[in-house]
Image (tube, rainbow, N blue to C red; front, side, top):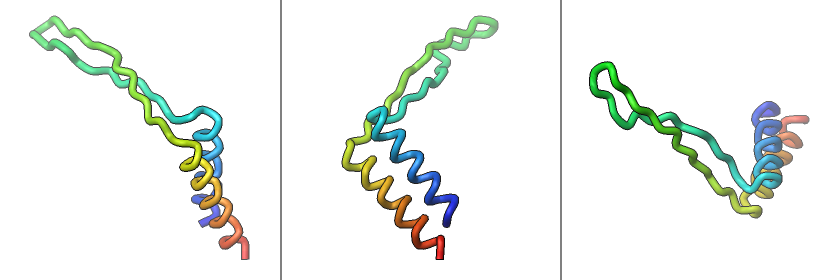
Length: 68
């Protein structure tokens, strides 16, 4: 429980600081024999500030509960 609480606190702080999470996905566009074309696809998951705050609060609650 303590590890999950730490992970939630860190993710919540990151969500509050950056406004969300983004990642890049390589997608194959054309695959015709020896010719292969790929494209980088950027995706973003926007996290509202209230959700980031709730994630931090949940993590702190787990840390407090697991500490006893």
